Structure formats: C-alpha cells, structure tokens
Image: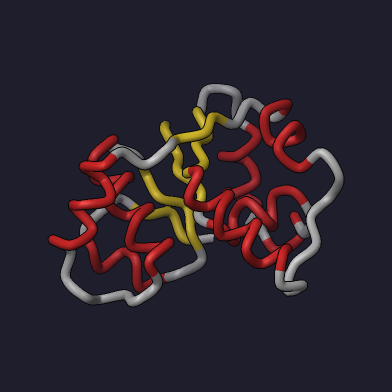
Length: 125
C-alpha cells in the first residue's frame, strides 16, 4: 500500500508513537508499504518549529529517510487542483495533500476525519 502521511501521522511516528493505533503502527512498520510524505507537510512542520509550537528531533529529515520514507513534492498541477476542491476544509496544507493523494493514487493517513469527505482513501489514526 502507498501511504501519504498527514502532519500528525509524521509527528506521532517520530515522537509519540503511543498515539498511533496498533494497526496504524503495523502499517507504518510493514516493509511492503511505501510511506510518502509531502514536502508541504515538511513545510508545515518547519513553520510550527520556527514559531515555537513544535520541537522536532535533531536529524528529523534523515530519520524519516532512514525509515524508508519518500518525499513527494507538490506539482503545479497539484497546487492548482486544490482550487477545484470543495471548501470542506480550510487548512491549505491539508487541502494540498488531499490533491496530491488524489493525483498520485495514495491512501491518506490522518487523524482528521474531515479529510475523508473529499473521497480519497483515508486511514484514520
């Protein structure tokens, strides 16, 4: 399975894994699954770190890469297709990863139940 992780999934995978369900942790640790992280999610985490709302471990990106995570930069088409999404959710980072999941055929792993309303495959954590 190809999984695109939302911000909370990334944070919990690296720091507070007790917040992940057993089945979610199993999916993240299954080598048969490919874990994708949008570079827009990295941007959102960087914004939170820079304003003091979040702390990330030293070597954060290297740790993700060592876990086999791949980074997915949004394309111009992904960014533009966000304009075509209904305004179910107002967070631009979440809307962009929904657009990426749709375009790339990825399953979104998130704690945000509202994102399932976009019709993309979602695994709730």
